Length: 202
Image 1 (tube, rainbow, N blue to C red):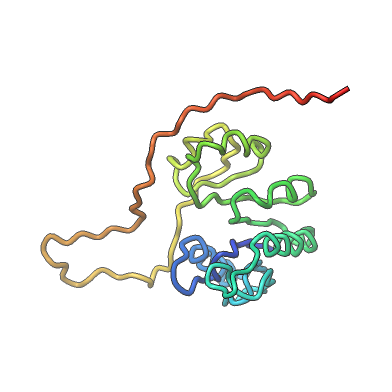
Image 2 (image 1 turned 120 degrees about the horizontal axis):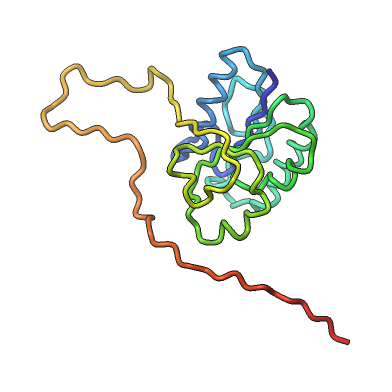
């Protein structure tokens, strides 16, 4: 199977330091290669992979100095994907919404895993045009704010089996936590949709 994995450009794949999404993309890509899939990874040029790497920019954006223009980097990423889109059986995007206008207009099979928050107040308004794009959630509860969108599956993040091993004798009062703790849960303000009219001067 010919699979394209399209990664964000903020961090390399895998990331040098922080980078949750890029780490998951790396694990997924390497596992698909090990299963015999023909995988192409679209990512920053400093990524390390056993897949075929198509670099959209020389280095990951966040740690690059001087700081590059992200819009031009993502334009190069989308151009590279568009140029090869018809050579893949499926294109798996991890770039939220930016690829949607391009891939929805092409005769290609693609899916998008949403890795981030969907409870931002502007999303129902600005992402409404992508309501029918095939989406994958990383938890069932993630879908809540956009529950009417085209969710085709929930796929929990996997990780290599050998990455962590429990201690032989855990200490008393031992707590293991794997996940994210961040003070981001705030009530969503209510917004009214205003119908805007454009008037031409006579």
